[in-house]
Length: 392
Picture (tube, one colour):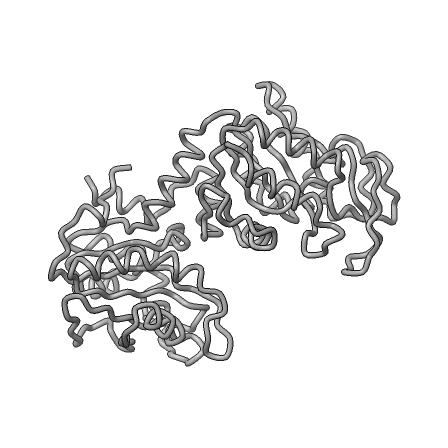
């Protein structure tokens, strides 16, 4: 990974422009979940301690280009950071053309970059204006590394130095360790409602892993591919042949997609719906599968405990309803206890990790959604690629 690392640079007195991922949920002017801000502070604090003139920007929400509104302002993020630093932090509104000064050891927040004209389309002129503001550009927003925008890609082309921040470096090292140099056996758990949205991920992983565990609605399509009735469960009939092909392909190289032997069903998607345990072969036409049963969960636990690497993206049941959460909880506990290197990512996965309180027992948790999936697919991320080009 030939990228320049922030920690290797002398930053004293330098103008440092950090692109962080501070896209957090805000309600009534207050940040409601600040995990991404916490994750971004390592890079910010490092630059402040080094005596740099620090600017940080991020996108927030989906503003219309060129139009500032209070709901898309980074003001609540600024308040959160100011509390952490114990001192006021300036928010600079119209910053693209400069005209503001930053002291050494000071942090300023540059307003939501997605409001700027030319940001999303990565317009050269916008990127060049960004680059003029700094001596060092720091890419630290892994969550947007799969998008080539002016603040993630364009600026990296023109800034005097372009480097990877602490969070981005950690994320790339964890993903590389898990996916490009994995300890074997390698197990991937991919949940979600549809095969179609995760098809490229499943196809890519099916060539790398020893066991590919499918969960949620995806698993129903695979169950149907083995000839079982899935009733009214979420299932993509047109992708049943694809599921068969993936199972055959993995079997040919002594790898496998474990299929549930028992399932938990209900008749409607409802918090009060009673859970009924059944053999996987005896689901009735009016039933829906909402979780895996205890035998299947135990099989998966045994696989996880023997693994060298576990990559987890998505729950295996409707864990929001406790009566359909036993499978996901059992897997979460196994991931917390295994000696394997464990990597987890994606919104639903993080919700499960928080629900079962295993946050500190996973080797690495990725805060990124789309970028995490694209890395799993083996795609090159444009914002990382440009850093590699600048690193040579």
